[in-house]
Image (cartoon, rainbow, N blue to C red; front, side):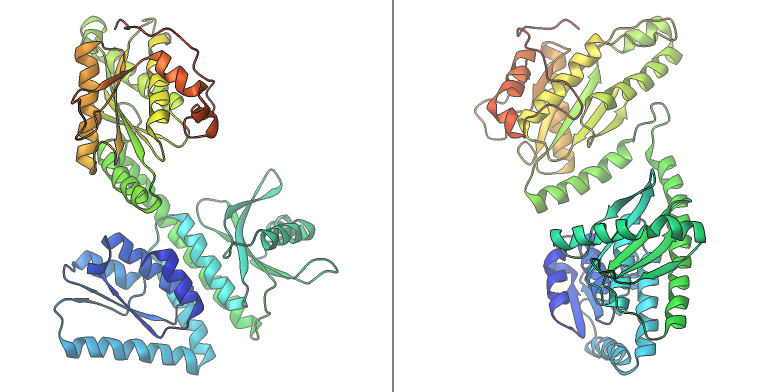
Length: 468
């Protein structure tokens, strides 16, 4: 089951117990995602996770997200029966006492928030919790920019008309600015002649930015004092988790950022590629890898010294980031080698971006502020997942080999990896005219091969070999 399918089932039916079998799901991350989906939508539903390859880390992560138990197969039948009984007893507590139910709902919500390292997930959890408390079907998270509300999280349902009603009502109430000035944690806004009622909950997650969870047509809680107390506890948990996220991001930056260039390093590259492969499997869209290497870079160190070479690497890394698309990520692979990951990118677009990068480096004068005025070029290899390779290592190797083909044959050029099983085992060169023709073609107009974000189209130039 995918998370979106499970969300639909849990939303329609009031399940007492869900058992997730890790061996029926592609990865442990997907299991945790399914678990989080169940507990976010229905905290009263107990979840037991079973796996033949259970680890301590996986079990701890599952329990932190609210799993009743995590059992390794083959498990003892009595242990399984006990876990099921505990889960059903937990559900009974929800059913028999509204006070206990409200408390367990908050505990589950805070438990899930504390296990989150991404603000977007916290926003989803907060929205689900508030909607359950107030029986609201529509909500969104906003922040204020330049005096105007800006949505930072989607509503809980796909209904464009209701989304517009929520935003119109929020604008008419002008609640966000006044709440911040008054220091209010929450506010119920009465129904107007033309607008429905609203509930607004103000909180902070990262830094000193105020976020607002806005719910449409809420039910007023019976015990306002108890509800206010729960909101304060929720708000405190979000702020504590936000500080933990900031500390984690600081440590993550030290672990994943290359000192010389300020780009992400290979450790983070492999994480991103695993994520992109999972995304590609889900949405059935390819992504591209550009493997880029400076031509005759050693001569720069020999002529100008290693300090100049290091400064050149830093400037080259910053330059490469400007000429890929806004959604792409550039990494330093090692030495004077760089890798760019282009999500949701077909071959035509990859050719255009790669040629754009190559040409921009060729025309740029580096280290002008240092008085060196250095001109360099790069050779680029291009490979697509899953067309050219179907694993992290294989797709990097395919782009790497294509780059070496560029080095051997021309330098200062772009080469495409050969397709497995094709008649030719040689990488194919992309000329400036090839890339310009793609941009000018009807396929480019349709969107897939359109020019990179915020970059003007390539000029049509004659094909030919380029000197390094």
